[in-house]
View 1 (cartoon, rainbow, N blue to C red):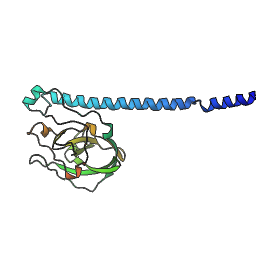
View 2 (view 1 turned 90 degrees about the horizontal axis):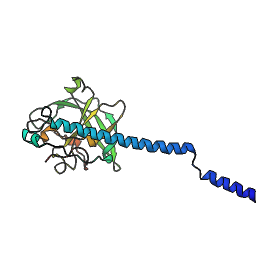
View 3 (view 1 turned 30 degrees about the horizontal axis):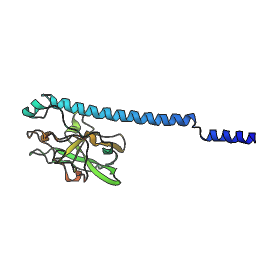
View 4 (view 1 turned 30 degrees about the vertical axis):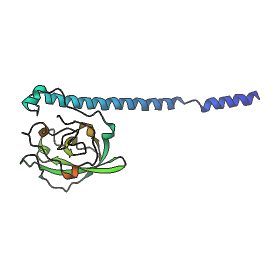
Length: 216
């Protein structure tokens, strides 16, 4: 009887004891998540700080003289994890360059580089991303991609003319779409600038509550 009781106790303890390697795995996963969150928040804070420095400097600010005098900070949405996507890059290599309409008579030449496919709330969306003909030959911009987009926040929380995202050509067939880094075109702050308009194909039928808000 004592032997049976001892066996039962041993089995019970064995079944309820978490192996050290399992503990380490859980700890590693937890630490990875914490480090990832810290990295994301740091990256977002750097993005905000960089934009605010640019707008506060007379040498780089797109603001009018009147607005620059009273400028404190741009308005941002809080960081929104739901607005970060792993998008599939579907190349469209046979597209031609064409003049992209702007807020002035200027017509810079762009071509559709790829389609970016991502899922949001169980639905798949697709956004064309563009490559500028002039920028392709400029140092530091050879791999630059331009993503203009509009969404349901435009005219309310954000600039009515839509917003932009800067991307780089990825090494594989996926790319991180982080709408927390969405920013307004310069013409949102000053009419002297010429800004590409948002193509109809780049309209999103949901609210992108991330990135820069409108100024006024």
